[in-house]
View: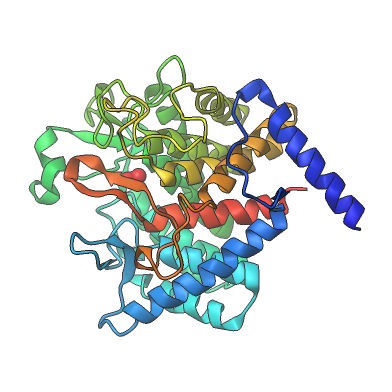
Length: 416
Ligand code: GLY
């Protein structure tokens, strides 16, 4: 048994050093006394840490009335709490479901249920595409992890709300409203803006199709993916952040950025959303065009010399002050999770994708990114960037970095 474990570790290390098609130094392995932490040791360590850290976070916020979701930190260094309408409201309950999936302890199931239930009203939201993030990470996980069949109703209702944003002349779901109450978004002069992030919200529609057999959900999701594939990508498979359409003619008005450095730059999380979104769309449709797109995006990311050797990107690949720019752990976590799904469908690149994801996971699990117990306002990962232009959430913890990190660990555990 010990011999087997040793052999597996040797193969793993050989692969990490040997799979040099995507040239990276394996400098981030956690080695103590010449011993590399095994995959299982790392996963158990991080999940145990997550239990302790989130226990502190939950105790810190549970007395708030009403109960709200922890998103990140405020300017005065307390936990930033948000209501169900916030785009990030589903990630914390989603992370609690992943902890429960790992430890199978009833108290964590109870935590997950408690923070999921306060989101139910999100199913009525029609003024934001993010209802997909909100409900799929929370109720979607309740269904897939705990077989909570009552979640189906919430998902279908939420999907019904989401498709009110479908613009048939263009073939997309409108991401953001442009009404005067939308702050900086209202000032950009957009007609029908669609952001690459929107790909992530299609999963809710595919689940609604699975539960109801109503093909409207499937068609809307697939049309959105196809229109995005046609208009959001440059020749090298990097992605624009925002494509604005004319709702009357269906034509593209402009291709720009909102959260990235410039219209022609590669906003790091946007590249990761595209990779994840097209992988997920392929899983739901089995349409080769979406698999090819996901593979091409993966190549763009994995071969990208602008990403540092430790594979945690700067918040924008083209940020002007590199190397003195913040990294974005959230983009790395989304990428790792997406690759661990994509590798199932790409036998010839399976190994390289797993190695790449593993390297991200090991780096995020190191002291440079994983918080010390009791610090980081109870969040797991340090060093993410929300929207650099708003001057908030830059180089800070964010609940979605934690969520996709835990998701990546769960998927990695399942890789043989
Ligand atoms: N809109 C989601 C994000 O900031 O990535």
